Image 1 (cartoon, rainbow, N blue to C red):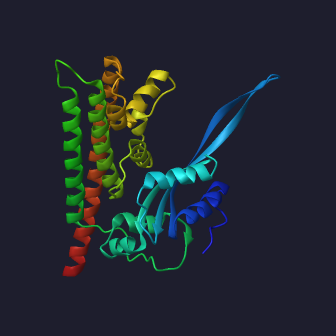
Image 2: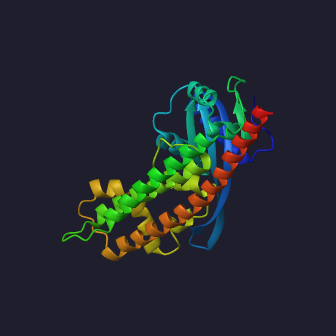
Image 3: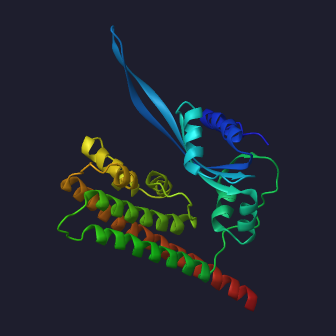
Length: 294
């Protein structure tokens, strides 16, 4: 099955590249964004700006083989598209996908029902049903969120402990962990999906598909804002590799403030979504109970 003709040219370019990297069975498009940036070119004669358009794609990729490192895979697509496509991919093998669907995976059933099918070898990947509503499903989602929030608050609180010799690099790592846990909780509440790759930009991007709160963490135009964001994203590397680097206390406190705002906003957003899910799951269960009694 070839790529549908109404899909954007950037996706048409990306699909053959993806297929060249791994034996693909099925590809679904979950989301697409176009980002326009001004590029500055200079010469001895003039100085002009030329806009650069980059596509940001979110895809579900079902393959015959396991993708060992999603980061390497996504970077390959980025490089082979001449940096015109940034891919955020979710990976399953064909066996994993079919097994998950057989067990009633709400995430995969939703993608198969609502996502745009870009490529498929055959119909071996089959949708067995729609979203599964049940009180136990809701309790599982609620329990998952509560545990993630507990972890997020733990890391956030540890970052605020007063010490005689505070480590700002260490504080960034704790804050990164706090944001990651909040993101993982949100992704499960909204998608019922557990990522196996935990890069902060990767998780924030998924949250951006259903929420505005990643904007709290995303950098603004100022150099300081971009530096704080970079340190949050690369906290583990900086702590291990940049021993001599010493982030300022004020910058780490700014990162701490952003993390607090993010967790509070995530809690509010999750609580609202959980209320919606609770009503839906209980309503569907009550309808089924009445049908059985009739």
